[in-house]
Length: 94
Image (cartoon, rainbow, N blue to C red; front, side, top):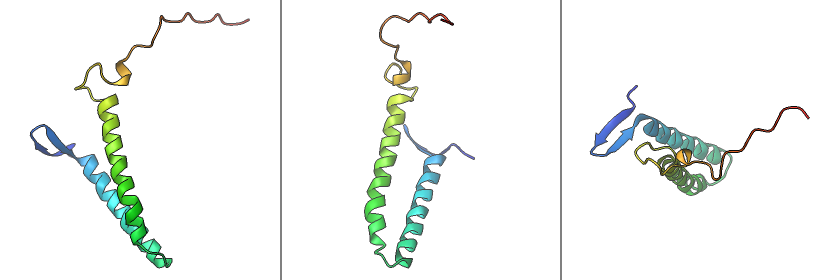
């Protein structure tokens, strides 16, 4: 499996992202069919899940960039040192 499907300059299209988009599209299609089978309006699925999925993908990418992207040293939360001096361990027993 190729981790990067397409690279245009600094922008890359990752295989996992494409698979996630295809899976989300198939899930929306299945939910629309289920709604239609139960007598409800299938457009309601797209009206709700479309913006929700888009917001989820954007939030996930933003979280990755801010928290884990190695190209941004010192910016993400995992590199920050805890505030204050280190605490001494408490003695075992009582």
